[in-house]
Amino acid sequence: MLPRDLKYLVVGAGLWGGVLAERIASALGERVLVIDRRTHIGGNCHSFVDPDTGIECHAYGTHVFHTAIPRVWEYVSRFTRFTPYRHKVLTEHRGRVYPLPVGLAAINMFYGLNLRPYEVSDFIRREAAASAGDPADLEEKAVSLIGRPLYEAFVKGYTQKQWGREPRELPADIISRLPVRADYNTDYFSDPWQGMPKQGYAAMFDRLFRHPLIEVRTGLAYADIAGDVPPACTIFYSAPLDELFGYALGPLEWRGLRFERDILPYRDAQGTAVLNQADAEIPWTRAHEFKHLHPERGPQGTRTVVAREYSHACQGGDDPYYPVNTPQNQSLQSKYRARLAAEMPNIVAGGRLGGYRYLDMDKTVDEALGVFETLRARKTGEDGAWA
Ligand code: UDP
Image 1 (cartoon, rainbow, N blue to C red):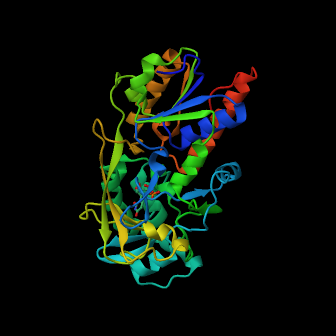
Image 2 (tube, rainbow, N blue to C red; image 1 turned 135 degrees about the horizontal axis):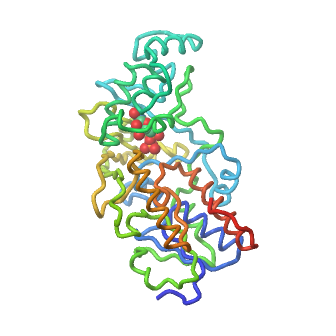
Image 3 (cartoon, rainbow, N blue to C red; image 1 turned 90 degrees about the vertical axis):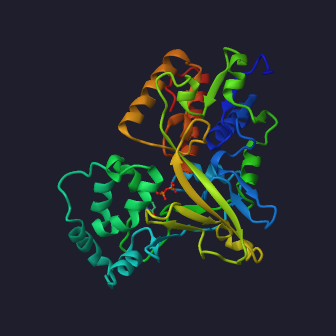
């Protein structure tokens, strides 16, 4: 049963929902109910301690917090301290391991050269044999950035596995996430603020949701309570919109992930937190060795936990991870959004699932803070569109 006077409901106890619930409780002093169909809070950032090894594992793949947005860093730092961890990613191609992102180390190793930083852009331009005009898809974009041989080696197979379609059918901006550098810096992210929650993600989310005005109910989907929600309640919804409308306009396409987790009898199995597999013949996209995310915790025993990540097309009942941002799917999402605005004006959809967007954690927090600002402005009579 839901309280008859419930004013705020948050669907989805991930970052977007967590920030909204925390703000509503702390800054507005209002009660808020948070539900999640999973049995834990934290969404895809959820971490747990493996009972056999004591190693903190990320249940849904490695999550490293990184941002260039001052208000986001200030906000998340209220709930955890961060370690100075800088993420490194390696990729294996035809039995050899290269550092990512593509920079001097990867280029020189791949070609057996000793290029200097000032020689890189001319070299890549020649390798790219650049096509005229703006790159229209992921393949054109990647070739323009790193040239065809490096694209074929490091991007093509990985992208086919990750997205289940050809890079030519995917939008260029997916690859813009990865920097291309002309130096030996092998940090995966360029943001000024980076790190891992010192006590882990689970502890960070416990603090985010720990407020006397926040009630969390897990194992509960929106459909289970939809009929019970008082009409005056404002709902912040971070779950797929197609589901909300019973798939009336057709299903939105998502990629799902499956993890095969093993405890291995080595102190160190792969020497780094994330090892990508670039080749199409290897069925997994990458493997996560979680102890490397926390070097400050020491060797953490003589065994290690490694999770291999496999990508697949979501079927009904699978957890959605990545929206497949093709024009068709974007247009379908827009139609669902139009119906939402017309038929359910008390529901604000957002976050990765509700917004159908490929969002990093920091962008998710920023978006939620923006939505909260709109809520606060509306309460004082201003008429703002939801951010
Ligand atoms: N990518 C690639 N090869 C790699 C790593 C990434 O081709 O070794 C491409 C791929 O298309 C992927 C995109 O770059 O979907 C973004 O990668 P990122 O590591 O940012 O993905 P995430 O960690 O968000 O899954």
